[in-house]
Image: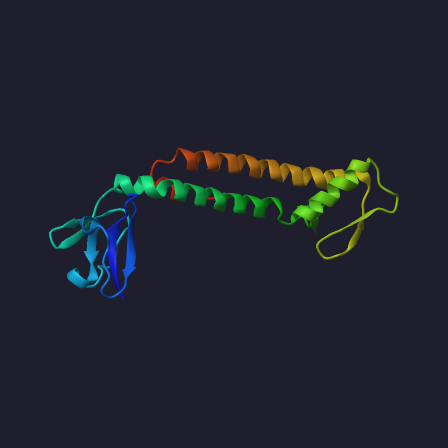
Length: 180
């Protein structure tokens, strides 16, 4: 099976497999065809390639049509990745009062339910990540919840800043530069 480097109708530049005897429906948008041009050159940067004579050259910038086709998808994928990082951060174990506590979604929901009652029994406990029961007062549980909340607020602010940067990006490089 051979490959072709093509500019798709939506502007995206991509490499497609072509079965023996097959062809691309718009030959004007074929930049490289292994059948006619030989093996696909090494180092192709999709969206930056142009044909000059019998060679492929890498342009300095992305082709506008390619950028318009892939930028929205790239931004959406980046935002999804950032949200995954955010969730990993807010549900990670938390160290508080020299112990490490679970702070996953279920644990946070249970903690909120316990605190909603407004008080706890005298023999109240909360298990740390080792499973050890630790005596806890209502104030102790509020303090743990406050630590989880404070961490969550910092992560939420960070997420909002990162999403703003992604949405403001006008190039793939700018989108790729946004990291958690």
